[in-house]
Image (cartoon, rainbow over all chains, first blue to last red; front, top):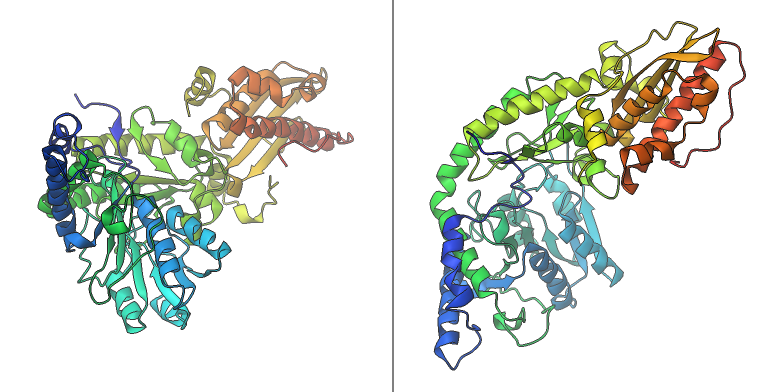
Amino acid sequence: MMKLPIYLDNNATTPCDPRVVETMLPYFTETFGNAASRNHPFGWAAEEAVDYAREQVARLIGADTKEIIFTSGATEADNLALKGVFEMYAAKGNHIITCETEHKAVLDTCKHLEKTGASVTCLKVNHEGLIDLKELEAAITPQTIMVAIMYANNETGVIHPIREISHITRKHGVLLMTDATQAVGKIPVDVHKDGIDLLAFSAHKMYGPKGIGALYVRRKSPRVKVTAQMDGGGHERGMRSGTLNVPGIVGFGKACELALQEMEAEAKRLSALRDKLEKALLQLEESYVNGSPVHRLPHVTNVSFKYVEGEGLMMGFNKNIALSSGSACTSASLEPSYVLKALGLGDDLAHSSLRFGLGRFTTEEQIDYTITAVTETVNKLREMSPLWEMYKDGVDLNSIEWAHH
Amino acid sequence: MAYSEKVLDHYNNPKNVGTLDKSKSTVGTGLVGAPECGDVMRLQIEVDPATQVIKDAKFKTFGCGSAIASSSLATEWLKGKTVEEAVKIDNMDIVEELSLPPVKIHCSVLAEDAIKAAINDYRKKNGLEELKFEESAVN
């Protein structure tokens, strides 16, 4: 018997791999020392564990250990990168280029910086969720200090051409910062080959624990510096004070090691399952994949089912299947997903979307169950939908004067 | 967010889903909401012209579970009521009956609006003056 509920929200967070937990456990009770305690064996053991984990983390992205700053997660890493560069490079300029489908950790940090004198250009995306590289290049001015473009999008899984973007940033002597939270551990990310100067990522999206992440800061060609945003004991080479989360770091390291070993096979397996799911769901009339079907993470698909509303749809199976929707009703704001809207989807299609995020523990049996459950619920709700009836009767929904509220 | 038992029950076993013949003079149709807002309700009543009793009510709703439940409940309440009684259905009665949380109150407002729109459609078709209602709280 298959165990329910099924978890298909791996873009939100992933379960800790049991091997990660096992590696972490001694660091809560036996090897509990403060990695900054230089004068006794407890401290030495903790420091050694952190050093080892730092190597594991650095290796996954092709970095040097001295380029890894541990943070509480990707949000903090994004903040440190953007605010830290903005302050450090104030003499050079104040212009930052980003993109409208970025995570709020980047967008809201940029908004904050705008209040303190930054000038921010927010690039648009096309219907596939991709930016226009010519537009990016044209946006660069002598005042530009940094381009912040995410590696892969959390809602659609769309992968930006980071390597090509870096050719542009290098050419103009501008830093490239990327939030790679959804990409690291899922697809190959190499800071040298990709030409990345700062990279934020997090353990809990790749089968590690919550509460630990890192910022990669390039040390050579160019040597990048950030102003610390957290003052205190001068940990992490002064760039991020605060006692190191040793068990978290150890778990993060183990998660990175496992990802490096298993990523390739996992991506292959999950893309086959994702394709099976997607193909089956697209059998439903008026269903659409959101975002580029080509430049996309292997384990993600975002599908809109026209004429049914996302939250209502999820209610049909959310006791048994965990998913998320771009529908407004799942958020406090009552606004549908800004990422899907940026792709040019009307609000109605954004309201009708579901995001499927497969993961390491997803099985084919679970996918088969999901296909059946989602298909049945879409059909059931369409029978209940006045919009579906109008569509079937050939009524043009745009011709109706809706009472907006 | 957890749903109340009653919302779940209406969602799983919606009452009175369907379509009435809107060309009939005894049928009033109310279509409220907008696709881009994430909810559209269509509520229909069929009135016995002699007694003014609502003898049938049907709905179709595009929206979340609370919107579906609100309209399903509304059709249940409408059946057997006179038009005059139906006008008095208040959205807060729906909120209370379904234990809707504050973020879902707009679903009940929409249901109330749909009832009133259906009644006015019926009145209009039968040469009666449309009733004036206060602006709904959802605006």
